[in-house]
Structures are given as structure tokens and as C-alpha cells.
Figure 1: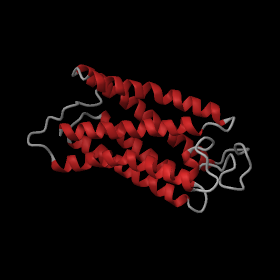
Figure 2: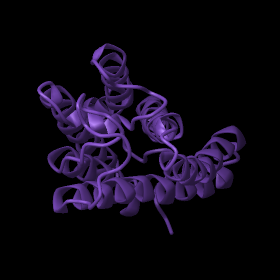
Figure 3: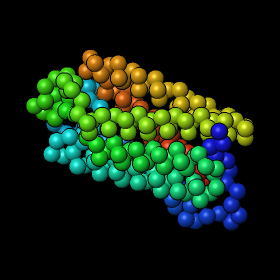
Length: 218
């Protein structure tokens, strides 16, 4: 699958595209930084026990909602920038899907769990609500979009003999599902927070790294 051509074939560059790709540079650090600040300051939240999606709940949940939406919009803008540079069809589609699904995940809140927000019983909810189910589907979808994009970019990097970039993409594509499975397994014991945070860090870092690389090439 031809996800991208790593070096854009644009005579004279594209100022608008570079600005749009810069949105991808900002998206990853913004999402992780805002999530960590909330995780360390909100009462009752534990990075080891809770997924950062739970920050959507409670009186201050609007902050994480805004974080999801703004980051998703930045990712969509990044995808438009990639499309303007004529980087094939699948690269902008996958990056855009990541952004749209991140917005969807923010709009569909998870169920309270593991004592968060404060006053919630320990353990998972007895039954999953409809909005929590949609949140999970959006989450799995955006992770899958990144994984597929990772392997597509890895193939193109190898073709251009950019081996370090290719290895990084493969490592992200393989490591992210491992972290996801570990987080889901450990969630049953109330210790899934760190692996699930790792999923967010890995996908956000990859998005930012690709944006930095593509902006430099542009």
C-alpha cells in the first residue's frame, strides 16, 4: 500500500502545507502534556490505575474534552497538509482518521471506574454504557490507523534507505499493540494506567516525529 512518498515533489514548496504540517508537530506534545498536568493535579486520579480517558469525567472533564477535540483538529489539519504535498492517498486518510476518531473519543465519555471520579466504586462498571462503547471503538480505531500508517511509512523509508526512520516506524507499529494488550489485561487488576498511557505517548510521539520530518522535507 502506497501510504506516502517521503520527499514531497513540490516545486518551490508550499507555505500553507508547511503551516498545516506544523499543526502535527504541536498535536502530540499538547495532548500528552495537557493530560499529564491534569493527571497530576486532579483529585483521586492515579496514573497507575486510571486511563487518561477517565479525565473526561467529573466537573473538570471539559478540560480533557477540549484537549481531545483540539488535538484531533490539529491532526486533521496535519492530514490536509500531507494531502497538499501530494503524499499519496492513504497517508492523509489514515492521519485524518486518527484526528476524527480522537474527536469522537472525546465526545463519547467512558464510564466511571476504579474509584474515579472520587466516590465511584472500585473496579469496572457492571455494564458498559452506549457512549462508553463508542468511546472504546473510537479509541481502537485511532490506534489501528496509526499502526497501519507506521508500517506504510516504514516501507517507504526502507525504499529510500532511511533505515533509522524505518526502524522507528516498525518499533511503534509493533510496540503499540503490545502496550494496548498489556493495558487491557492489567486493567482487570487496577494497574492498566501506565501501559495505556504508553499507547498515547507512542502514537502521539510518532505523529509528531512524522510531522517534524515532513515539514523539514517540505
